[in-house]
Image (cartoon, rainbow, N blue to C red; front, side, top):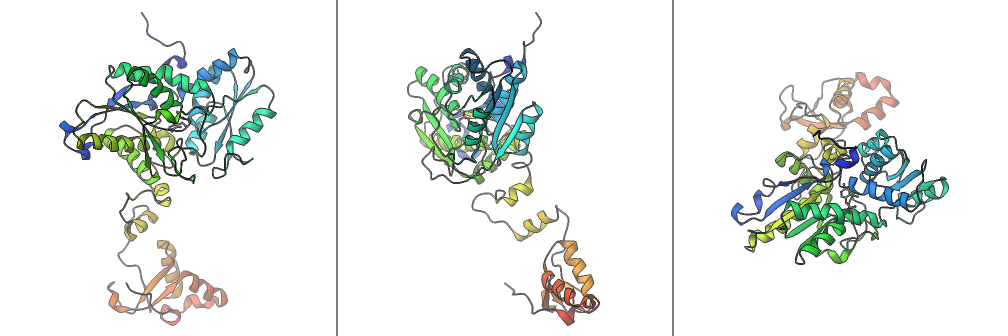
Length: 425
Ligand code: PMP
């Protein structure tokens, strides 16, 4: 018998579970820990958990006569649902227009375009009811484009049903019914609602844990902007049943991003941001179980929704991380050296960059430019870099202002034009 799938659609879902054993190290002695298993949704053909809902939403619309041959699929998406829909649309020959908030990574937009979809970008930091929001723009396009159909993952029952029909049963089978805790980060809530509904029906005392970014109202926070993509909301989607969630763990951007990187580097699983959100909630539950002696026998399944390839320009870009205040771990400080090293992309720079009283102003301006700095102390010492000889300072702004008034100033010595010394701490 030859072994092959009829189309890529048949390869969606059935993602593996893998044991997590390295990022869990700090939570207590191994023999007291619960078993932590991650469901690797990034291994689905479109790279995320949202592959599971694309085809069912399209087929339901076909059945109901809402989507006809030659039709256009329009959807507001953080990217991954778009990938799932685009795969199904490619096979079935539909046009796709996806409306995204501009905070979503360039990679996710580029992948949508790669599948042949059109992408419309909208501002992220406006309320959902604003005419500029990606929800409103998608609604308007769906009204205006003939033959358009908006699956509306936030209200489409097929979203939740897909997880009830696939994600939940897979986890039940893969854990041989031994799952005790389900942890998922929540966007539309389709994953957690559908999977929990199925699993609860098998095991009424299953503990369901929602992981939510700070700034999302799902866990009761006040809505405010955050950087973690794909999870958290500023409204309660119709696809989410809050009753199924036993407890919430709220996670900061900084912790979620740091944990996503750790999963990648320590477990070898290239993870997206919401994996970090879900894993932090998992570790909190695992630690509590370990400390209370309930670890042995407990089986925690955490959904890892998408992979790191979606976020190479952000989560896996040190410069972007640093610029957004995400690189240093919580509670630690960023050192001046780190800031300087970052500016110089790791090049070696001297401990002290200074000007001499005797050198030409032009040379000092060039040094400021070379090191990308805006001010320097001035030393009267002929050599050495000790602070003792500091007698003044110069600044790029001050020097350029003088040079503008009197171009000949670049030929004068630094000692003639310098300002008082910088304060010493
Ligand atoms: N993580 C990422 C990266 C996502 O794109 C989504 C879907 N928006 C989720 C998690 C949450 O999945 P759900 O919509 O099923 O709650």
